[in-house]
Image (tube, rainbow, N blue to C red; front, side, top):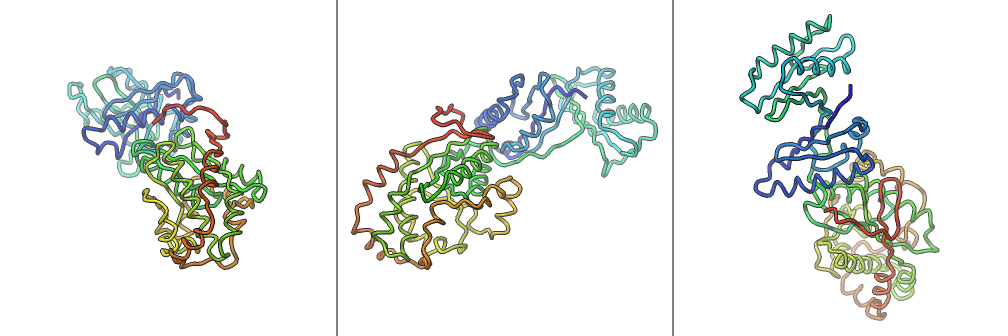
Length: 402
């Protein structure tokens, strides 16, 4: 069967009122970017539906891309037909035969938004059900749990036939809730935090701290590969790689060993906050889960957060490790995160980090050294990559997508 379009259903966007069109516009831009290597595709939208016009492109391949786009509740590969009963019946039979195999059951589900059409919904169900039963010997009806549900949607401009409802990623379109910066390590948690933030409509850019030669090129590549997975949601992912070696060496010279982790996180947060301001973000995102490690106790968070008043989003705060790993498996980041290449936090982790650091103590230890020049230098020397699914382009100017 040669499908000519994909019909996209909005889901949560449909609950929006006067600003619904803004959300639809964000979704349209996400879909366009995700499908940019299908050059014949065209995208049309209104308040109720979005249509991807295939124009000869492979509908199944396009559908695989759409599964990852936030803002789509479900979609169907569809055929557009004139509002002519004979043509509708011919197209319905052809579509059904492309999916049918012996023993499968079916039902017809008609929707008629065009009340001027000559048949009402019950009449459409009977007319087309009878047509299929007449032309396919042995076919049986099952209205409760059919193998094939032939959907006939009669709208003012045309009739749309489809037989599959494919679930989308749901959520809100990327960019509809503003921009935030993700503290992206090479671990399991932070990519999941980024993914869940994107699901709520955030445009997310990553910030990764690298400490060569203590961290390897393979550790850097691991983070680029994680970014490429996040890029599959919207077609691109901006990644900022911060040179952090000099700062970590200074920390370990100036701060007692059991407080180095607290100071390290505080300086990372200050750098991330300046990059957020530079690139127009409104919040920071971390992969913290309460109590999971020493830096994620409430006392540690209190001492670390003191350096900024910027909102810090923690999508994983109440999740346990098993829940996080399950999501990482579903979004295909788990195997990448498990590669044995360490980031700067694991390389420099102290033997006995403080789980309940005192804010006054960490500020006292930091007061003996002026970290400001090193922080500013790290911000200025940060490298920015525009990562796309499957790879990265360094130094490329980012299109205004959101």
